Amino acid sequence: MKFNNSLSAFEEAYKVIPGGVDSPVRAFKSVGGTPPFIAKGEGGYVFDIDGNRYIDFVQSWGPLIFGHADKDIENAVIEAVKNGLSFGAPTLNETALAKEVVELFEGIDKIRFVSSGTEAVMSAIRLARGYTKKDDFIKFTGCYHGHSDSLLVQAGSGMATFGSPSSPGVPADLTKHTLLAQYNNLESVKKCFEQSNGNIASIIIEPIAGNMGLVPADEAFLIGLRELCDEHGALLIFDEVMSGFRASLKGSGGIVDVKPDIITFGKVIGGGMPVGAFCASKKIMSQLSPEGPIYQAGTLSGNPIAMSAGLASLAKLKANPTIYDELERKAKKLIDGFLSSAKEFDIPMVGEVRGSMFGFFFSNIEVKNFEDALQNDTKRFALFHTKMLSRGVYLACSSFEAGFISTTTTDEMIDEAIAMAKLSLEEIALNR
Ligand SMILES: *Cc1c(COP(=O)(O)O)cnc(C)c1O
Image (cartoon, rainbow, N blue to C red; front, side, top):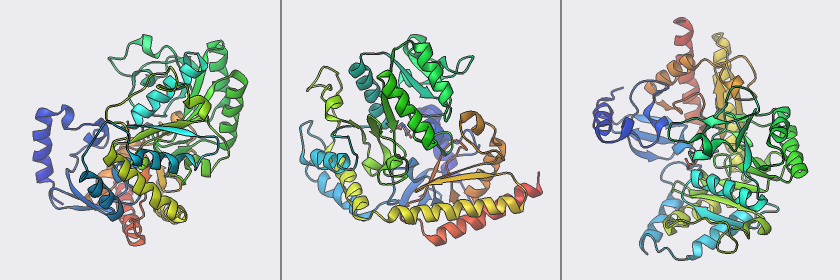
């Protein structure tokens, strides 16, 4: 496989864009090598500018549940484009998409659209703080909620501690209200409540974490969070930017029976266009401007082109509710295939599946939190990733990312990926 065109494209990009990319993970830093520049996508495949074809398990990091260039979404977008790109005024599709979403979730009455997951979560945190009139919130190590200041936080010295900024440029003053707890560990959350002294506005969690590899929360843990929030007058925020309409039509809601106060969406809700959203009960959402005093706005929010893609996507998902069983069957088949080859060559590996999301670690421990995830062999993952790429299988370029199946991912593609994984794992085993 040749990468010449991508190599020179990356050099050119590097001159004018930091790291040659507009979002860091795309630079392939944790796996090495040059990222293929993508020329086009077609269903379950992407093609790079050297003409190489890959089976795509990234799917734009989640949004493309119907694969690349889906005709229904494409046509909806083309029709919308003909009427103009943006008005900054209300349009019918915003209401239509809002209805499609809120009717899926009990206790959720109103939704507001924004342009990214980052914006959705940032706004949800502000809403929770404004509503409860408290400042602190709890997040979990290993969960990612976008790049807004108060969420770019890493653990300080101990567990259940106030976080310190994880990036230069974020003043410690802006993260001092962010408390960090351990995923799937209720005791660590209780400690945060003790430490904060009645000032916790909310707990934010990825109920199916996809940003430390795929690490689902235990149902009992989520129930515990719900109880702690109720006990302390805090709001529970489920960040379903990745898992929403991905793990099931109702995200985590189709898998566990725990109701959050606020849900955030992104990725699939935009069908490939930049859309984020946050939603809650009428009572909570009525605090949002212009109904209430909590300010939030966006020039391109609810953009008509983005709404048309989201609406086409959601309508199609709702019309075909059984696709999730099919997607999960394929995801399981893929992971089972990986695991059985790993076993054959005596390479430690564990894997998880939730609907169309999958994840695997080069590790022999069950992964329940970020600390467990860090035990996995990232060097081996990098090797595996490079070998798979050169065999035409495009996997997320970090062992801390989830993978995705689309409706256009065929059984033949899964079989092919399993066969390529077998060859790659065998080579890894021979050379260890
Ligand atoms: C991707 C993601 C975000 C951020 O969304 P962007 O659209 O990249 O800003 C937030 N939360 C979760 C859980 C995500 O997976």
